[in-house]
Length: 328
Image (cartoon, rainbow, N blue to C red; front, top):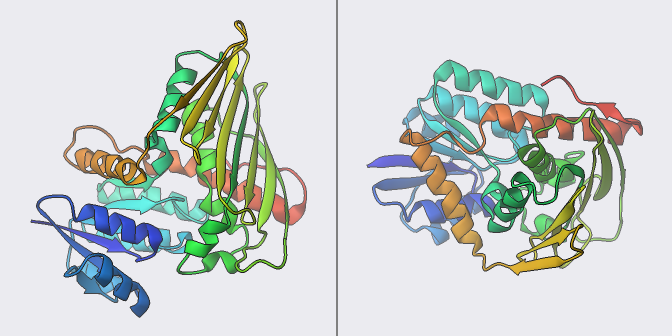
């Protein structure tokens, strides 16, 4: 029987906890410093062993640890888990800082355990379809990309409310944009210029709660990010414009739209998507990686690209000018 420990009983931790109980031969345990978190975990997965102290839980030497806490704690918790001998699945972002991400890379290399960062959008059917269209050359060379997410719901679902206190938390929460641009285009940005504002009068907030950014590359390519914790209901879209056409993905509607410049035709695919199934695919990919069947889906070296982008974005919010990305 393999032991898997889920650290952090927030909304994403509870989902991991619930889906991991489906795996035969697993004893699933949960750790949270909050009594309310452990109560929620007990309701979601009755009978799961509970821990209130992570050091104590890690000392019991679980086989795997899923780190599902706010990003400021990722580096420290991952180090403890790796040093205990566990393989680690860490929710995105890898860390709240480039220094934290680099320390996690060193810890993974030193302990020779597997470390995967949970970018679940890499498993979404809509994103996989867009990736195939781009990789097959259907839209030509991508010259423009845009990620837009509008979701007050993220703050409503947050148990820790860390977004209220952490400057730039929206960019950390939605590092997806930087990760997806890297995943699809494989070009490292050179600078980020961001502006943010504080929209008042909302039931939950972050600092800032609405931001936009322009991302520049060395090649003839530009990208944009829009993240806001104001809008409800949620919206989440990607656009990739190439010299032969475009791909637009609407994750709120499970839709992929492909426009062909030469024919002038537009093709729309509506996909049937179960978000639990997407997370099951991510879970199973990680478990297969532990068996040596393939590499992890997002190694820490890959995840560092997103953190470097977010780091530059947050610096730009503070300085009001374009900020270069640190060396990778």
